[in-house]
Length: 190
Image (cartoon, rainbow, N blue to C red; front, side, top):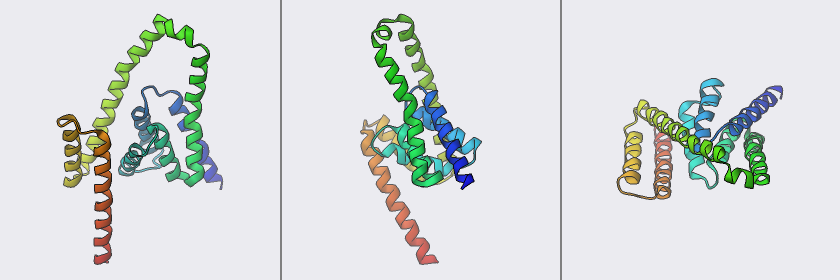
């Protein structure tokens, strides 16, 4: 029980910290979650984190919250998911509440608007780093099927203008079929 409490406390503090100091949306927080939970704490394997990110992306809602839900659930079940949700939602809720109180002052402040515009470049760099790390993870896995899916998804969205929603749905269906076929094959062999 003590171990689960420690995990929940670390999960809460980590997701609260990440949510409080992450600018740029869900893809940025997902990268930081990977660094915290895979690289630092070693709670989750890298391949497993890629699967959790895929689930978070395909579920409706904010990817930061979805990512927190799947990581929290993986680590400590339903209570872990709830802990991660609360910790992820608190910082934006407080920040947006404060901004709404001082909206008129922020709206016309030149320094604040320039600061936010400058952050966009940093966000772009972090998202590029996420794409690079995730792509490298797929390539290092050396699965020709996974590499083919990655290249096909990239080509469909970038060159043919296919809506990302359709790409995610097709990839999810393909993943389900592939997993079921693999389990059927394992049962036949075992």
